[in-house]
Image (cartoon, rainbow, N blue to C red; front, side, top):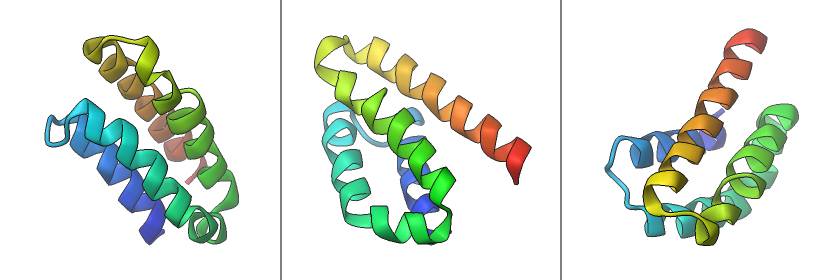
Length: 89
């Protein structure tokens, strides 16, 4: 799950303060667009969950939220994805 791990590690780096909000909000959709087909081959359901949670319900909200609220949202989405993954895998 190399591509899935890359995207999740990128999110973790953002949450740990290693990547700023703007870089993450632009970078994650770019990386997902580049890697999505490979992610689907790795695990379709996990890839779809990441796309929905991190892009549709995450980075797409960047312009509507303050930086701290955006980070809280991404943290919530990240925890949800990791909780689901823990139960399934």
